[in-house]
Length: 150
Image (cartoon, rainbow, N blue to C red; front, top):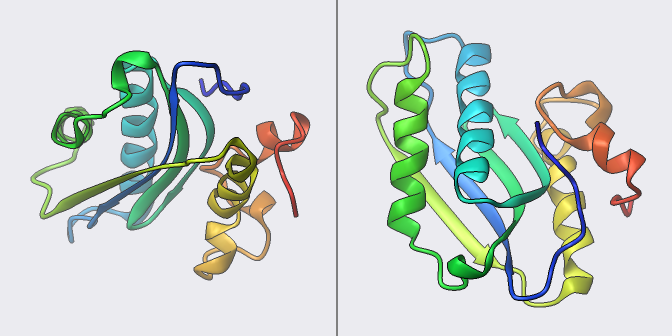
């Protein structure tokens, strides 16, 4: 379960993009479910607060606030945790390539912009007409917590 809260002091908020190709023999919906589950597992493992998350066929986009021990996050550790979590999913074979970007969000005023960007990604990439149409997203929870600009 993803919890949408406000950032806390002594922490770092990041915009996360995980790019991973779907194995050819695997159905796209199973792959997206595996990416979604990996995002949930890794955020729980590291004690991150998830403000927004969306799983697309080739990537996961999220906005997390990491606790104080991750003020200088180890990208290799996060990437390895994502790969391990995806491998642990049923019917997922070898992953061709995985690339993780964690970009710190410098100003708290920019968090809502990144949350908005995350939720509207399915529309921007042509996978859905509205964010409501996309099932693997925290858009409904964000709307109820008023964390949406558009």
